[in-house]
Image (cartoon, rainbow, N blue to C red):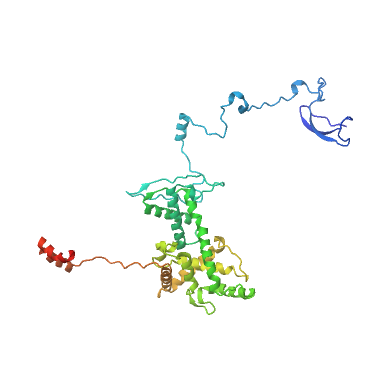
Length: 414
């Protein structure tokens, strides 16, 4: 028995009908086309005699939906599309200017505090960083997107930032990196005697060089580490693996004689990496950064050298060379451990100043390797009371006559 249909309810019913070709068709007889049709089962009405068999009065048929396209009308050729830029009228512009504009969504992303503004002096020029390009296909900002002045300031700030990164701490968190980038940018602006606001795009361009700077240190040190410890890839794998394990155990690689554990911090590889990474010549990063040579090589830089050596040795732990990324996730803890060990050793040997001697020795070798001339000793022109009284007597009898001058200077002009 057929199920009765509730009045006023419309149900779509999917049915399949098979259409066969006629006898006079040129197509084969076995070809059949499956046609899907949708029929609306409506309330039965005996007064309806439509050809679809719905028995629905004409008033119950659904009305078609009308859709208008303004661009298709010939009389609306000047209709502005959605993607075009509209010019705001004066009242609208005035209303927009009165509305307080909030900060951009990305302006404070990842920033612990507002970026600093460079201090201005009487001779300082106030300029504004200007973008001349809109970035790449992924909307990433590049140094080349800015004008010539901003680009020059940015490049100098990146160089200063990388130097400060090695002297303040190679593995900093995001907030510390932004603070260090702000200090570097302000320093460059002071040297150039300009005032420029530090935008978020500029901060990102500076701080993104942190991992790059650490990677460059490892790439420069890698060719030095293996030969310094006698690691030969031609030897059997087990011999190389055992040697590396002995060097890494209790940080034996920091001793001049790793087997006897003598000569702590006197291994030549330490000064060799310092010279190669930062003091290749007098124009290198370390030579141009006064913090490197002010009181000797800073402890954060020395700790970074220790961590780089450990990473290069980790690449030989299997007996064969395998690239190991010098990432912050893998080596931040090791770097902190080396820095803490240096500070603790300095505290325990403060009476004889071993760490101070280490820093000054590394700085002396680095200065010699980069061919940096020693700064001349500062001499202060100072006159005591005796000199002043003698000068008074000399000037009291001073006679500025032409005859005396001609006699004293006669031999000079001849």
